[in-house]
Image 1 (spheres, helix red, strand yellow):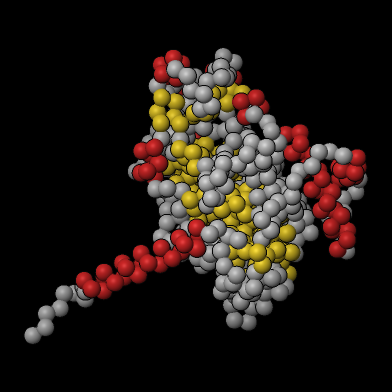
Image 2 (cartoon, rainbow, N blue to C red; image 1 turned 90 degrees about the vertical axis):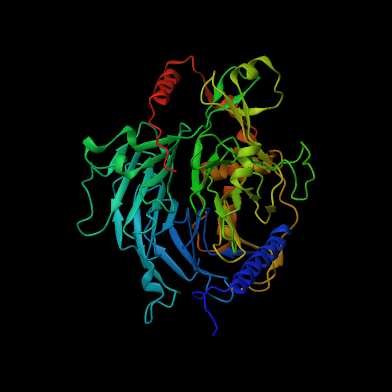
Length: 530
């Protein structure tokens, strides 16, 4: 008699593991070559500020910006060349997008202080829209008094999302019948403008925030919202170390944390800093593990000091984790002021923790630390020097100006980027894929930022004071308007592009304001969730 073992077959298990390992090795070989092929997706009429793929299968790419429209690109098509649907309704520049838990809804927010809710489910059912039309929002939220900088949807509930605004309000929205709370109970009023908010992808009560003062916090909705009697410390359960220290400076610097994002499992948190580098944290560790720079080319060759590389000084940027085809997000992408986007491979957290340096306060002040920038919670606290990931996996060309937003497809081997221009760039390691065909090689170089001349000065003044042409219907008008916009940001780059974070973001403990910050830091409640 043949004996069975509850359908367990060692041979099948070994075979499955072998296939999994072989698949990951094949994907890594693709990624090692970077993303040398690309296509311009052209439909917007002005700057494209934000990109977001729908969850799970990544069928839809949502894009939005300064033309007051939200476009949906359908990646279930054989060849994506134009948007499948257009959502209208915003009356200001769109700055944030997110799909709900099951992709039934898409939410947008921006400079008009309003959040709009769109029903995506009507675009894919039998007898629904063919995807080539235009429709408006199904609901609007007018709870903010200033620009909506970020919004993030609940990981499991379509009707629940958080929004963060420059008015300092953090609002929990719950559209379920009978599931809402009063406006007061669902609002946290902060002392600084919020710049980012991100729901944890697994733990439904946990989320992270960032603000213009550089503070990055992990919070709990049960402590943040509801009756005052239930609230505690603004819901903060962890404060991340975001202040910078350099031996040559007698003070610390607190760079603005302009956006943040989790990886798919919520184990890693990436923060985009103004005037500094993208920084990687572990959820359970307040001190940073890695910074992502572009000091080397993807082949490991050092970049000459005279050449431009990764910087972030001029615009609001949003990065993204990804790992298409992998079982973890081991890549991170971000846009840069050097007219490129960068993708870095992130080592395992255990490796990063082992490579981080810790320097006691005594060692910091008694030894020489040339060119060392460390993170410190206070002037007399231990310094933490995270690993520098100086060699990116890829530098993504194809843009003529600053890149602001990066999104990585959840399953297909594509990265999309956008920014000051009206085109979206779709990047790929291969000439074709299930969603695109016959891509072209991306130009190997990017436009050089030229010194200001008379012609550039005239274009800049026309962009600054003259009527914008970015919303004209004629192609010539659109191109002229884009040239003016690029000229405007070129001027900003010349003025602000080389700013030193220790000069523009000084944090001195001797000032009254900074003493208050220290007092607040000493009173923070730290709860270890893991």
